Image (cartoon, rainbow, N blue to C red; front, top):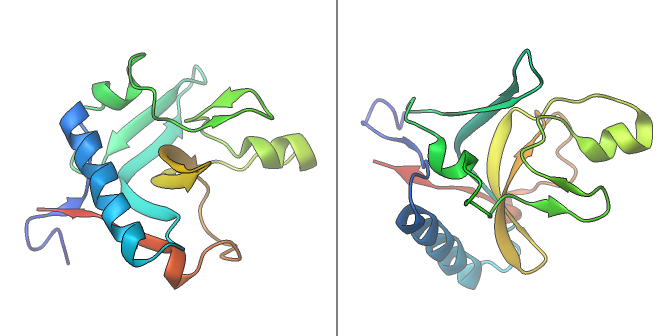
Length: 138
């Protein structure tokens, strides 16, 4: 429906975009402190050379969020891993199961917002209506 109206899930291309996204997320948390996951318009795949490939839903460039200066991807201290990883590192470490993570979201963890790639949500046990949202760009 949103594409029919000329829009899509939000994409990020600058510091201003990032700041606006976080401000919007913070405003939403004021009304709902349970909010933890905000879907945005990104997907990841793993290339032939095991390189992570990020794509935006509007096919725009991804240089900003994939650059070395963008430091808003989630960092897992336990696994010493910075996202995007392209796969569920925790699942790999604990069960040896390689689960791809094709979707990108804004994640509230450790009292801050960061980007993370996540698996196809066949298990919704961590997700509920009160802690999920999306941000639409027109």
